[in-house]
Image: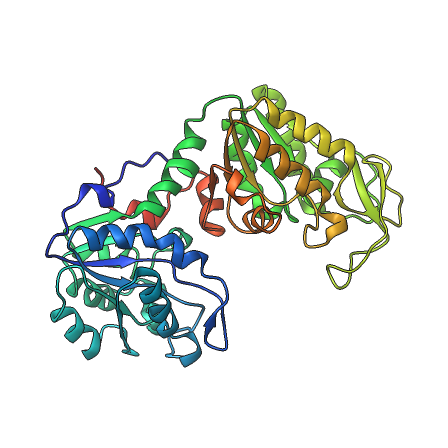
Amino acid sequence: MQYNKKSVEDIDVSGKKVIARCDFNVPLKDGKITDENRLVAALPTIKKLIADGGKVILCSHLGKPKGEPKPELSLAPVAVRLSELLGQEVKFAADPEVVGPNAKAAAEAMKDGEVILLENTRYRAEETKNGEAFSKELASLCDVYVNDAFGTAHRAHCSNVGVTQYVDTAAVGYLMQKEIDFLGNAVNNPVRPFVAILGGAKVADKLNVISNLLEKCDTLIIGGGMAFTFLKAEGKEIGSSLVDDTKLDYCREMLAKAEKLGKKILLPVDAAVAAAFPSPIDAEIEVKNVSADAIPADMMGLDIGTESAKMFAEAVKSAKTVVWNGPMGVFENPVLAKGTIEVAKALAETDATTIIGGGDSAAAVNQLGFGDKMTHISTGGGASLEFLEGKELPGVAAANDR
């Protein structure tokens, strides 16, 4: 999908009430935020709206309260931390019904440049069903709507889609804009050569991604657990490695499709194998490197091997655009993270535009210390996958076109 949406740069918010839907779905432990990356990521959009004289009403979901006002999933701690990060008070509207007397009174009394935060939008059961009443209640608080929550862009909820039907102006924030520019437009209109790298455990999760990216990329690299289904489809011995026998025909179809389109699919030529999956996941484990077509019957592949890592790194060197989604092995284990590390290193050293689809690959890149070397790391797991599948994302589509 090619998108050209109104952004915070295109709208006038001076003296107007603006609802900004952010992604404040942060991990909490005993009421304390343990990872505030998402709060920090939202600051540029919030600061822009404040600087432009908007009356800023922030909203977000947190966890899955399933329509109940669960105190442990309140956004109250987020208001406290945002106040510190912004250097000004973020007033918390503590209404279990989200748009209640506190929110209405606070919104009514706001001055230009002030900020309030509404309670967890998922305290309302209708939020995830895109109910009309709650959408209208949210819209009644504001003149302008800005969506900066890419993580929920693949869902049609009240606070990211429904509300836009009842406001005149709906734009995207800086984070959303960046996701659209990189994940959407760079994939659809890439500077070539374009190399896509897919990993992760299951082929089933990536069926549409594989098919869509094959049409767009020049080379498709497949690693992670899903590679073994492809290797078995080619008739190779994969031992006791993870495999999805129901997808063997699909893998053969994709290999044939690549040949027909003149695209390269690179599969591992060797693997790091062990007798069993590590338990716990980061336990010490003895591995050996074997050829990908001769994995012993009682061994399973848990990472790409040393030759595969070299081959994949080489393929990235000449690329101009690289998209990576899914680790090359069980990266949570230091012994089985080598393949993922080598690929991350290759991406860190290339001059190409490097785009990391969210979820596990984003976690891997950040944990391994390569985060600042990538052009773009997506903030959405499911949303980035659906973008790579070429699907329309309801949360993006709902914003006004330029």
